[in-house]
Length: 139
Length: 160
Image 1 (cartoon, chains in turn yellow, cyan):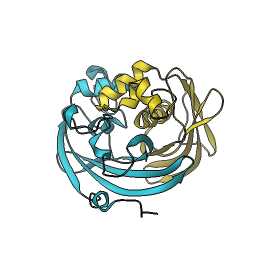
Image 2: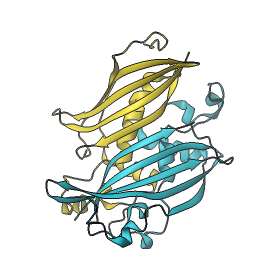
Image 3: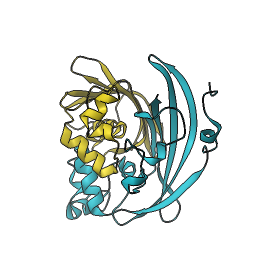
Image 4: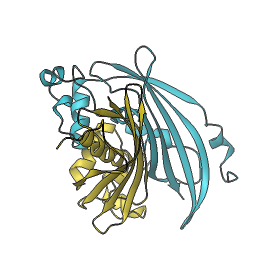
């Protein structure tokens, strides 16, 4: 179902995304970003640092928000700004729900700016991350 | 609350490091796979040519893959954490805190991106289990003409 961004009104819910980062994804993301920090591949090291398991990278959390937004936008526009804060470590094998709301929409010369508030929660409803974004869509 | 920041660490704030990275289709493909992006615009040149992008483009936060300098492991701290967040403070257990990322345009295969990073700020915060050191790193990404393509200000949290 495609969204009509020309007529969209705030507030508007963004269709949520459910996904479960696993060890393979965390490993691939460390490799792709050449992040050798041991808390992302060694459970023993992560536990010794007081973490619950190896943890999903801060940067990968940002990409989960980016996927929510690009899935919603399709070809209609792009992400201009994306900010996020990790509030609790995400660990492999736990399902996450990525959600968002378009909270404000402003028209500009060649399109519209959409401001969004974003959140990631785990299956127990605990906050894993919060975020905000500015999207640009063409008119 | 910056009394706990040693002078040697504070002296690193604002010191810039610059390097250049060539971006290949393989880099884009691997980053896209790592984040679970399935859009063919990251993988398939023939398809990508038919889109508004006119060719393969990277996912929006792709420049994250250029952020950490690829020094040999012997030059990394003992925990393997990136050099960019290594500062002489009495706390080295690090986790990622947050990020502010701005995007001017998507990166294309074949581009050379100039990466400029600097320690932007260092401050402390009282956490539940003790003093937290906040390490703020800014990374700017520019194209061959010097025009910015993206910027990220990342905050890392370090505990004793």
